[in-house]
Length: 170
Image 1 (cartoon, rainbow, N blue to C red):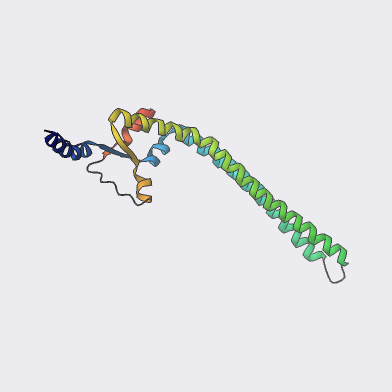
Image 2: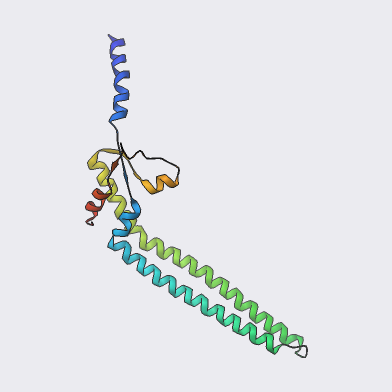
């Protein structure tokens, strides 16, 4: 009797594995359709252009000053003035590098702040679709492909449209 129950359980186990449901979706398509994503992207582009213009102005100022000193500094120019010019150029270059680092950090923080709520909104919708559909795994097909994971789309359910509906977008 025990052997029959054990045999029945062993035979039923593979059926349980086959009954698991898998789904995939296109994260990029969903994100690009979200108004929140578009707004955040526009704000980030504006911020990036502001930082880029600031750096370009600093580079232009450094280049102009370097050209000016190159013309002014001759063999007749005292060494202390040449040294002061070189120091001033080095200081400007260091300020430029610091501004690049500061802008990069500020941009990354702004990007995280703007995109985190949008990403969370999408992931909440994915979670809801997974629960409602009884899916064991729901995977972004682009991320899977980048990771070297192959999705057999003939047996995996495409749920991009369901997620978009859950988010109220088409």
